[in-house]
Image 1 (cartoon, rainbow, N blue to C red):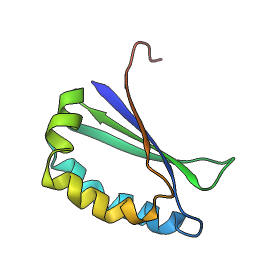
Image 2 (image 1 turned 180 degrees about the vertical axis):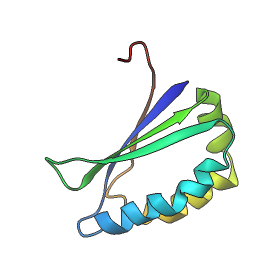
Image 3 (image 1 turned 30 degrees about the vertical axis):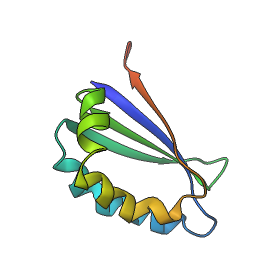
Image 4 (image 1 turned 90 degrees about the vertical axis):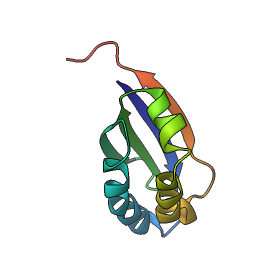
Length: 98
């Protein structure tokens, strides 16, 4: 299992609409192969910053299957208009958890 970590900076005044767009996208992720779970975090120190954590079975499930699918187009359609700049993306592999 891997975790996709995406940091978004949204345009001022769009935080609530961005959250609603992520929530509306839950069914899109749920039907995507390899999807496990999703969490959206809102940064306290900077209200324009959100961090999305998505767990996938593998990097390929995210990068090859999801990002090259119609589901990705639908996802971006729900949230893309709120981005102040391109999202920052990385993948991690859990080594320790307590």
